[in-house]
Image 1 (tube, each protein chain N blue to C red):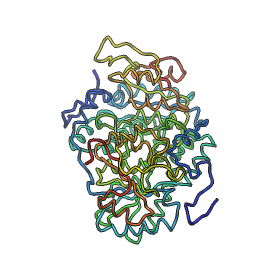
Image 2: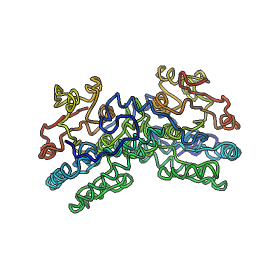
Image 3: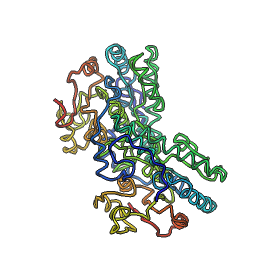
Image 4: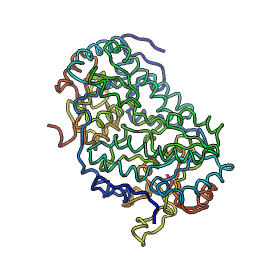
Length: 277
Length: 272
């Protein structure tokens, strides 16, 4: 017999003795209730290439709009990476470095963008927090209304390979989505430089059509060549327990962030079938 | 470098102005990868299967690791075990999300890894937290004789939503495998309390047949009801660039680890 030091379970699920890879046990764990940790928080992702790389002309008005919303909406502000990440990804791929190393490198770029956003918001008492400091997040949200963090999930060298190529599959869109999901956030808003989702990249194909609202299932089924969001977000959303819809807005248009925070249907909403109104 | 205030400021690169989500752009990034630490072996000590058994299972295994130290460089990942099952049970009851369960569970494997590092300290092994694995592993391996790390990857609150249920999909098997893959390790060896892979759980079904070798895709297609490793490792293997196989061996049988390090066909080899 096993010389196991047993601990009594607090829950009916046969977790202690059975195999955790057993499909039936896994399924049973899905029947447990879901508690939203921060149900009033809004996760807002500020695009790297789409917003931060544009500098003052794009970032200043957005910062102003964030400040104006501080008293009404609590926000976790995550940043994307952008053109410097593209540079270091191509350099690192050329040098033969693996995906996990690319993630470490790309994280530094999202971190730089988060620091810059934090400098601009510092006078309003908005802190920058590292993944390790997330336990202080409720305090800052209650006292100051927002925090800034870098959008990359903290996978570092442990980033899985993508199905094709070498670029880390879970980047800042995914990191911010997972923050929203784990805290049971009120909203997940992506601030980009387009009005939302199109049938193709509108920067390259002027004839592409605008999609104001679409289900994640339909979007995945369309299997588009290009998307407004990392594919991992759509895959995770299809099986998420808290986040039922995500919204994409144009951060270059004043008022869109405020409208989205107020619950208005600006930009594109991707929702989960059967969940959204 | 272009510097244009009217639009995005770009750094020239092959990915400049490209959507990294575009399938054609992603396909263009397919190129050869170099191994960072090609002579290192990643050894994973199971939590439930080895650690929870205490001295009788662990000490002979650690002796065997030390005996192989001169010939094989090893980094040791350690799993969580029964304390994680307990906290999963409590956490599920409280309604906590998958990411919170992952953050909690990683402390159980950290405890186990820390104990292993204490037991191996006199042989020159060091314990490295994730940030030190990122920054110091090569230096530590040059200076120290081996390293012990937390098998559970540092996904924490950012753990992926599982395909089914609420349990974190990336445990110590996945974390140890990913370390093998990113460093291009010589081998990834998972130490369990079964001889390898069977068509069913051999503890419950005496008619279960042993599988000495299989491809990850074959096993995914077979949809076995239980596996001695985390199913996500099979998915990771299908996308491997460097660590193209993992070997599952019985860590309770003396000599198995030594044979696996030599490359003998022992246990089950799961290939890409």
